[in-house]
Length: 213
Image (cartoon, rainbow, N blue to C red; front, side, top):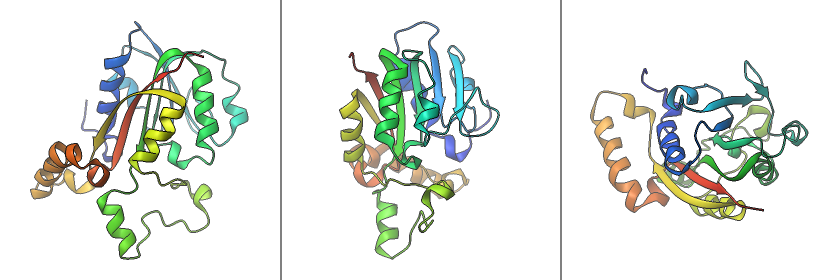
């Protein structure tokens, strides 16, 4: 497979976590926010259903419309992926409750969200720069509605699931350049995210088990 686009570098980690905790053969999974459809290329052993708000997907579902989400049958899937999506949603708590409903008990749910309080974001706020500058049009422009810390992500997911594991990732567009940026990003990813995730994790990838009702 070709090099992953910059916005998809967390996908291999998500797949690795799913394979680690999934115990079912040929699982049926759904991906929400499946903008690029890269997932089935990385995990071909699953029965894959793609979903996004508009485009050529198996299901066209806007997660800001709970009415659309509720059309999916209960206990329909063995697993679920929702990567870098919930921070764009107006009511993520209600959306995640629907995730619980459509995934079978003990199914594996992989969710990733940004750590909006990493060191780069803190510097931006300190100098008065807004990284997600959409003014009062956050939903209309599809930018981040929520700005979670790692602690917020842990508490939010633990409320709904058995939180199995978190993985932390630092990645920047500069890491794609063939110069010292590449080695700096490697150093941050392999060392600083491990010891100082609150500062040096830009993406938090989580593995969750759907709680038995």
